[in-house]
Image: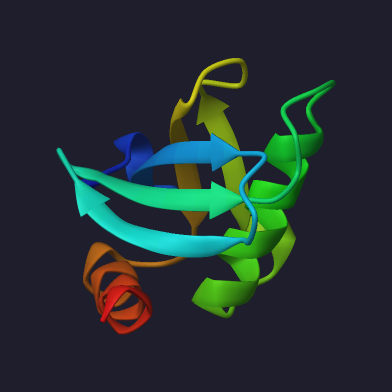
Length: 98
């Protein structure tokens, strides 16, 4: 699910988003991606913004440290989590998923 980012800027996190869900929540892991349901509908980037806010809150980090690097118009997204090691990101995600 988690892979190292190039150039030591942080850690990449693959996410499969479900916009327009009844509630925002982490739905587990599947095929190497964190599955996240988000209430915001996918229009004009609103779901991406809500997803960044949700992830940053659940990970306990500032929104500015979660950057969408690919998948802005798809449900398969890749985020770069700045200044968080792979080990620490795994630990935090483990706490969220369990």
